Length: 79
Image (cartoon, rainbow, N blue to C red; front, side):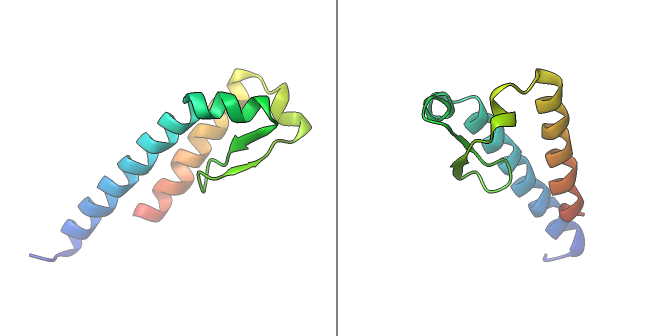
């Protein structure tokens, strides 16, 4: 019952849950309100943190690259 493959499947489910929460928190109203006061959600811990000056004028492609980097970085620890 508790095999290596089951453990991988369960960790993959947690990974999918984390990615879903990350996408929902990035696109939420709370994120927009945090941006108004100069904070944002951390992509690794999902906790509010202060924004740097580079966060205010970041183009979309850099955010997409950062998201895929976090996606791969977290995925490495699943397997």
